[in-house]
Length: 185
Image (cartoon, rainbow, N blue to C red):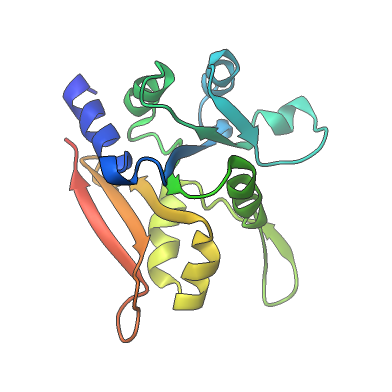
């Protein structure tokens, strides 16, 4: 991806100057999507948290979701935008609160229960899943999904856009989501 596309992606996910002290920018990565993700995370100076808890086998840690608090000045940030684009590696998000609170909230979304009571792993951090799931949510489900998150960003199905999902302030008679499509290609 040309550098101009990388910059457009980063401009979209970074909050405006007046909100930068209030919002942190994260990426939630699915390490199962590419074998280069884990080594790169191990080499970064950024704060990285696995959403799975406890000691786990190596195979599971290589397929786990990882939360990374991004810094605009880190070399990892443009690398990620360039190498992950159109590969469904994960989703960006803007969130308030401390990193541990954001992690705990995102961790709470990993398991869902079917109507039959069976627990399933919910890969909401896959942009292909998020794009389908969020528009079907009720206002209550959107509120539960977002928690401290102010916006989720998923690569568009077309590969030329970044889709931003935010909670609508007053969702009476409207979709509980505000969806903005940002062209990046």
